[in-house]
Image (cartoon, rainbow, N blue to C red):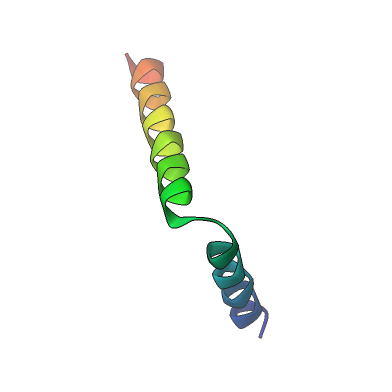
Length: 42
């Protein structure tokens, strides 16, 4: 039941925020993490 509640909250979260803003933020975080990971290895 807790899992279904989390999905419901996530859907509400996606509805309140613009998808464009959400995806640009997510891709920025992913790129930042990849860059940091490559720097840490090199």
